[in-house]
Image (cartoon, rainbow, N blue to C red; front, side):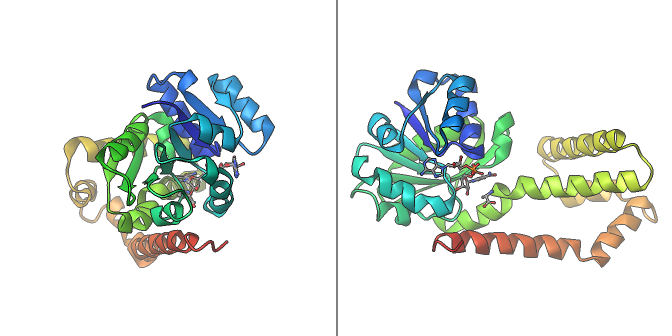
Length: 268
Ligand SMILES: NC(=O)C1=CN([C@@H]2O[C@H](COP(=O)(O)OP(=O)(O)OC[C@H]3O[C@@H](n4cnc5c(N)ncnc54)[C@H](O)[C@@H]3O)[C@@H](O)[C@H]2O)C=CC1
Ligand SMILES: O=C(O)[C@@H]1CCC=N1
């Protein structure tokens, strides 16, 4: 696969970097760039990878993984465009940025793959969706998928679905943590010590997620199994329905997809 440079190694860039290292990729074949020298030093200390400037990384690497914020993408591409050739594969992990945005700013024929990862990749449980740009062939797509497979699952989607993917699995961990926070608070309101409430909630989430994966049953069936007629669960779910929580989730994810779409036009 050659040398991989992670340009803009913040939260998501380090997550991918650590996954590549865990999966056995040699640190010699990995390069990082960071805006702040202290950050670059931290990453070289932690992973023994090389840190260099964006231009040097573009010159040295075969695959360039762009992991800056969408708002910083224009500046980064402007900086490296003169050093990217048709032999490079460019993989973008940024929300909202279409492959066409990158293709139109990079030399003709450069293969671009758009990816939407998520942070559970940090524990090898990531979910990533990949979409090829105009000049990316099956081998380029496989190369990008291989990078992300180092730390989780990978699916291919049509690029038109990437805003929806961003809303569901890209931002998804945050919604789950939000629900977990709310359930822990509820436990505390009900008088449980905070550490006990936290353990109950985290294990319940883990157990429910494992059940969905291992049984393959639809969540409605699994929910009904918990919900005894006239029982405690039915009383709680009635409150969630009365407060329109399901509708709120759908509206929230529509807002995330809309925001992803807006990011393409450089709206801050
Ligand atoms: N955090 C998440 O859960 C996810 C993030 N993403 C995408 O990943 C990208 C990065 O997000 P985070 O890692 O959360 O942000 P972050 O802010 O932690 O990381 C971005 C890094 O890029 C650096 N940077 C900015 N301009 C630079 C430049 N010109 N050269 C070198 N470094 C530069 C920043 O200093 C920062 O360290 C975004 O585009 C985001 O949409 C995608 C999926 C999930
Ligand atoms: O919040 C964001 O914009 C990024 C993209 C998906 C998750 N975090």
